[in-house]
Image 1 (cartoon, helix red, strand yellow):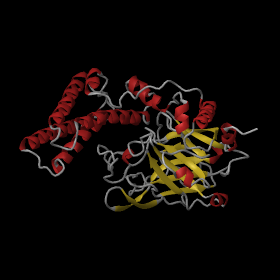
Image 2 (cartoon, helix red, strand yellow; image 1 turned 180 degrees about the vertical axis):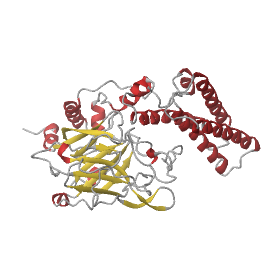
Image 3 (cartoon, one colour; image 1 turned 30 degrees about the horizontal axis):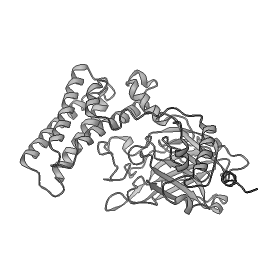
Image 4 (cartoon, helix red, strand yellow; image 1 turned 90 degrees about the vertical axis):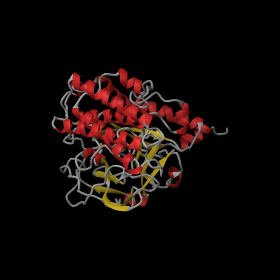
Length: 429
């Protein structure tokens, strides 16, 4: 009897592990031993890895972004996993990905458990997320003031075993993939659009929940100021600014500076009283309107100002989650629910399985992994130490779900517990 395609795919099955993060970040002091972001609990004999990184035109020697710490005792796989059963892996990588298919990376291994050492303070040369002046750097975060301009939020992670199959794009493979993922993660929740992504100005006008504290006002004002100053400096792609444009930009800059002065005198997490909230909203809508009139005269679009507000709201809620034991008492519930929902497993379709591309980021260890290009084929003989799919948990530099970061190790090197030559690949659709 001829074998079916399903039989052939079943023969390729490899045991693998899904890596699931918490819905919201936690304080850096949280006792988790396996986590994304935060600060590594590095043994004292390990230096924080550094490399030369190119974020713009120049190479820059920097300490690499800390991506994840995994206590291998937390990872299922007794009897079949090639990974050590004890010890801790620390993942570091450049967070500047533009034009970089093989970003500089280092993976360190300690035989001790993930809670054996205190948090390592970030070194002074730690690279800003997305690199100095990188295309995905968040300009309204100040590397000299904001920890999370260099350090990702900390998300505890958990692990669930599943079976992975070898295929690139295949309907039968999609059925098998979806079946295994549903076994590991459940049937999923209905897909709902991000509350803040692609939100219109009119929708922000109807939503009176913002600004809900002075930290959010600070981020939004910094956003406006960074664009205004950039527009005044660079003009419109070689075209000089008109006198009217300069006057308008200078007016916007003066307003932003005034709001920043008010922010400095107040506690960031304090609530905003109704009169000030109304005043700030009026100022922000005026900024958007001004940029609509400046369209074609400056580089910044009005849409960019609107997108920055949504990003700033999410970032502020994350900051609050790292400080408040009950964030719902202090942040609008719709914004908190929106962030939580982005991490929930969405009901998958067979078509998504066939393309190995889902609406929820799938992080994993071992198995084949997935990506929009060819790294999974090139590294077929290697071991997939960790796959991190683009996830809104990672701010800007790796938030697009179409991007996939892999860490690969040679099988013989893994047997020898030699992690010195781990290779990272980054692909984006």
